[in-house]
Image (tube, rainbow, N blue to C red; front, side, top):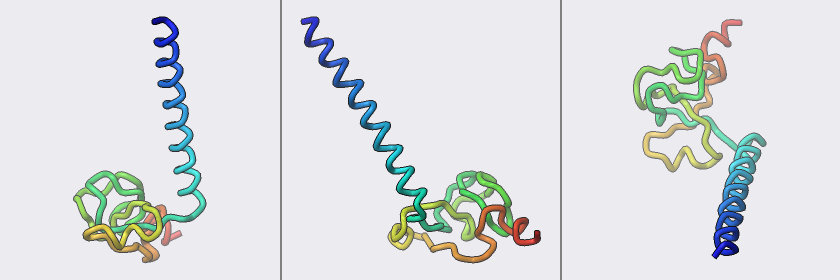
Length: 101
């Protein structure tokens, strides 16, 4: 019985390590620029940044603000109801505050 318990623990730990590695790989994939800014889908306080009304992540006051965006894998935004690719100049990090500099 003790060997079976050790095997279960080892398998559980291996699964956790594999899960961590896959999450890291997903982050690295997104960091390579294979993402797009998708506006109109963010919940209040969940935007990634940059609108004409807010200059920082997590500051949008209403759900589905047409300027508030989140990063999604390229090609995904058009598949989300209400999603629009955000390519306006104010949809950059820092929003309108960054444009005024």
